[in-house]
Length: 126
Length: 126
Length: 126
Image (cartoon, rainbow over all chains, first blue to last red; front, side, top):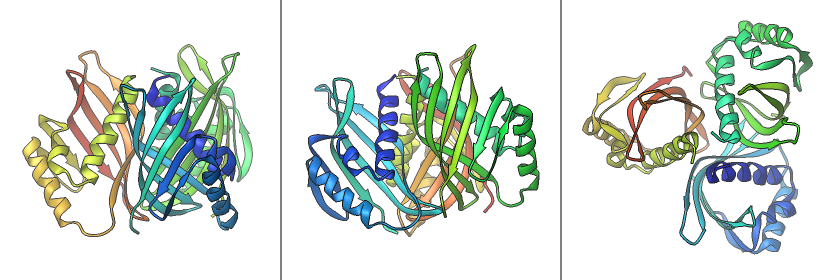
């Protein structure tokens, strides 16, 4: 499988964990010291902080099923093996488009498994 | 072409048949005994039943052009050659998001052509 | 990277140029004599005409961030090297689905870089 397809497959599985409310398993898709940053909150450093933040967000939510759609992906592999991606992401809630974003990831390939070292998500205005 | 890309290309062509109102050609993308199941109706068994059900749905419809978007795809190939996929699907009608779903397929590769042996689509609540 | 993944990666980078307001760089992703045609206006012939048309459209726009999502891609390569693609495209503006379209491209591979020789975009009714 090409790296491009691997990243697509990885994102599909990763975001499904989140959409199914598995905050802890979602956090495991980051490196131990992985960072998650987005427009609306302080960056989360490390798997525990990421799991706690998403657990809270999931438990607080009420309403139709939320689904994250990632697309318009570009992938660059650097000489040291770092994989840099850029993509758009939508948050869909039932029949409603909740949010449109663009994002950048730094991924690593650890023994055949992709992990997120850093993710930065920029929310678009309404 | 990698299996992952083949599945993406297959889904694009398959759903375009449906969106262009070609219910009978859409049914041909299933195996002879293929099954289509979704939240809102009894499962359809076999190409004829699938063609009839979608022909009815297409002829009954009025309104803006309907387009099926599949994404967030993950693909697993089993030892016996069965290809299992999971994905999200949206139904877009003009400027309206009509439906958000998640789905699972069982595909087979018959002499280089992918066919759906089984599809299960779960509709999200509004 | 498979041709299918290359086209996906190319479209992601190309549309990001447009969404970031870089009309001139967007036009460079067409061949010198490339053609852009869509439902709502006369075809634009050549990079200069494409750049001018998109520059105007970008400068005229006001409102939330616009993002182009391409998906449901199928790719055919012809014997002479011409690459023919079909896909759907959405225009997302903040939380609003602005437009749903289907499109066809003729691409060429020039020394490892994909370029659009011809693009035809059909807008769906609302």
